[in-house]
Image (cartoon, rainbow, N blue to C red; front, side, top):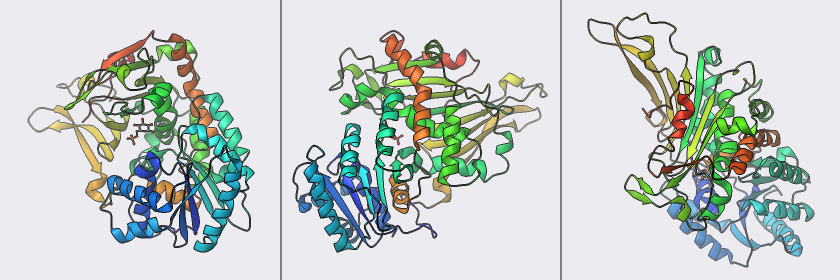
Length: 503
Ligand code: BG6
């Protein structure tokens, strides 16, 4: 993250991590804390408390976190900064199936807080599998660890997946909101830590020229693509129960959709922004199962080559059912029932083991209305796209038509591109820095609120139900390294449209 001159230094606090021995903590959380430390954005009065199920010494935990940091850091690790950060780490064991361990945790924490003079502010970060969210939060609540008292704040941070369908997301919301209030709950979606994703709001609302054309009068349709090259690798057990739709759409793709499609919020604060996002998600047209089948394509990858890497058949991945009907690719057509977007399709696609890594939102403007230039019929004019690129390059591109130099009026499409890396010197980050910093300063703007999460699940529920009922019927296959199932092309072709080719 760039060290911004006005960035706020958080209050002193204890940063308590459940799942401290896991992959997420090593790969993202500690490297992000390191980057914050390097940017002088951690409080002086700070401690990290790593909760382990089994007894572990603080020395062993620090050694393991240091190893992870060296492996996953986004920039060269400076010993003095790493030492200072890891010096604050203490391992404490606690297991929600043993309530007395949470009472002991409370006492340990109070001691550590007194030593480090953190003022009693606590952030509990659940970097655990989702089935641990309810038992851990219940115990934190019962043991009084989440009670805000004496002016100190308490915050609870949970990772995705937030539920597996509408009913389970509601149940989890009810459970957590019975323990902490909405303003103390931080539901992380790492897409909101990406610069370009945050920049969607700035692009739309700090430039006078886009908003007047950001509607059904001028926009033909919108495409959201999150293509990945990686297969499912070692995550077979999680992925086979989840699939591409649950894993990516109600969370990451809907974050992109809601930022692109929301109404202008009246203030740039958590309440206004999250209300506007939830409102547009709630306006996604509810499809019947029949419509959902017609407006979707799902696929599963078979063996193939992604670049030089051989990827095996999805059904042969460890812990995947050999007869699995779980999709590794999903494409959907959605519409939004409101004044701004009525009749404008939103095409979404995401998949694993595809030929290229590409994450983008492409806004396709309407075609020029008639053929003024004899040499180029209107249908041959190239497409007017505004492309918000997140991967492989963060930036924004505008495609428009221009005259090819010469005596006749021949026309070709060109592209005007802004790339972050050309304009700003930004130290490489993993996207969690902004999110962790925001949790510590108490700004929920980049976190999902209960109504937004539920509206997202509500919109995908017909697809989940329709696909489950259809079983293997309608599940397409595609070779690893390809562009996905051919049927995904047909989803747009039947509307006279195409997926955008990479520039
Ligand atoms: C995670 C999903 O939330 O997002 C993964 O569980 C996916 O399956 C990842 O690979 C994609 O994130 P990014 O930042 O690489 O686009």
